[in-house]
Length: 279
Image (tube, rainbow, N blue to C red):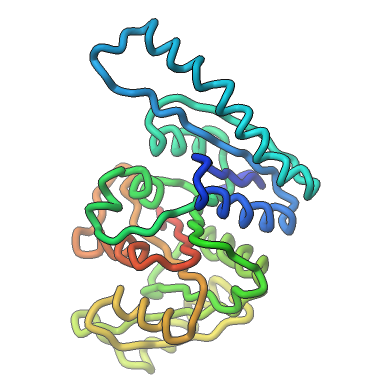
């Protein structure tokens, strides 16, 4: 069983998409009565000619500017009566964010995401891949301005196998924030096909464990899992996709399923929620 604090981490890099993520995080924090942490990582250049003294000068030269920008952003949360902290770290963004999540037992990360056109472009920076595959708490990525009232449907893609109760508990909390209907989606493929009757029985057992509310169970047939998820998501004009994903903590992911999460993410859903399914 995983336990987390009622704290939302918002990594910021002062980009437009990070600012939109902060706006969404504030909305969630208000409803959850959560604490917010604004987190920025100064990526110190890895240059052989930069000695210790030069690194120290570089660090100090950006520190005050960065802190002032973060204070300016924090006023948005103060105006909503939210308890907010500012944290600054130095190093590689993905690694530092993951370290902070684990050390501070963060409950949710809300992250601004830019649009990617190719898989290698997305994985090239590695920070996003690291967060999706190594974070011990749920990750919510945000693209564009999100109005809570517009999020009426959430597509939750699942194979109906064992999912930690923690995952569905956290997802139901997000569902409640938006007041959205949860579309529990099972994609049938030719390599892993089951009859509707079998899947409906499997879902009943699944829901006995998770006790979902305001939901509909859907089965769709597709050539691949990711194609089925994306087709259904677009057909109902949903704003959010949610799914458990394979963890790379202390083990290798199943090669066959490794890129499903990344391929869904690459299609640029407005909101994408994921949580690793560690047993």
